[in-house]
Structures are given as C-alpha cells and as structure tokens.
Amino acid sequence: MDSSQGLLAVMLLILTRAHGDSVTQTQGQVVLSEKDILTIHCNYSAAGYPALFWYVQYPGEGLQLLFRASKANEKGSSRGFEATYDKETTSFHLQKASVQASDSAVYYCALRDYGANNKLTFGKGTTLSVIPADLTAGNLPGSPNREERGLWDQKPGS
Image 1 (tube, rainbow, N blue to C red):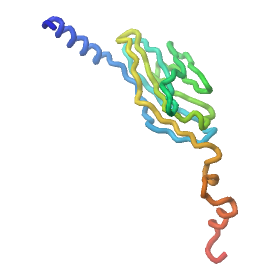
Image 2: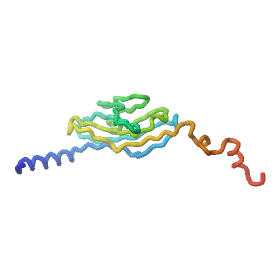
Image 3: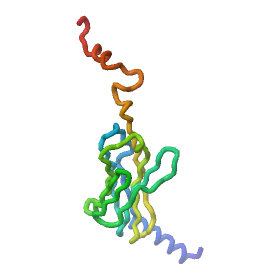
Image 4: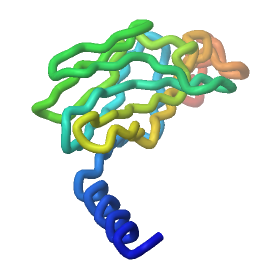
C-alpha cells in the first residue's frame, strides 16, 4: 500500500466514524408473564435515510427477520409484533399487546443507512423471557395451594 492509498483509508475511516450509525437498546433483559404488554425500546442515529429492522433469535435457532420499515411513519408488523418508524424521536420501539411463552427469545433492532455506509448496524439485543401462565406465583411447583396460603396469613394462636 503506497502513502496515497494509506491516506485514503484513514480518511474513509474518519468519515465512517464521523457519520457512524448507532442503534441503542436500553433493556438488556425483559421478564414478563403471559398476556402482559411488551415494549422493547430502540433508538437510532444515522446520517442518511435508514431502513429499520427487528430481528429475532429463538433458542437454538439462527437470526430471523421479524419485519422492516423503510420510511418515516411506516409501521412494520409480524406475528402480533409491531413497531412504527418515528423519525422525529429517532425510535422504532417493538410492541406486542399480549406476549406468549413462545415469544421468549432475543430481539435485535437494526438499521441500514443507504445514504451513508450501507452497512447493517445492530443494537446489543434484548432477551425476552415470558413466564408461562401455569407457572405464575401460586402455581409454581412446590408452592402452597390456596388453603395453605390462607394458613400463612393467620396470626399465631388463631
């Protein structure tokens, strides 16, 4: 590599970092019960006009595209999940009205900025764990039944 190629490589690196894209997922882990409402936050920064994506990775499986949105105010949706591309707040929050145990997975927000570097940039991912309805408090294996719980509420000597 001669000096002009080296200089060009350094300039491209600086420009890429100056116009670097980022995706921020603030929640590392979310634990919900079945039928709870889900919101996974995703904010982005991009120099150009990005397309936004949500990917899902179920246990033991590869990464799968959930959906995408490529313009402001466009809503992406699939399998009961949805997100609206909000250019003003630079957000693409994933929502679902009623989660199921089968939704337990890792969810990744991503963007591709076609106006800048055209690379796919991922957030760190959010692990969703959904507790099945039959394992909610009071129904856990080894937990007391309703009558036994009532005994716990009594005062000694009553």
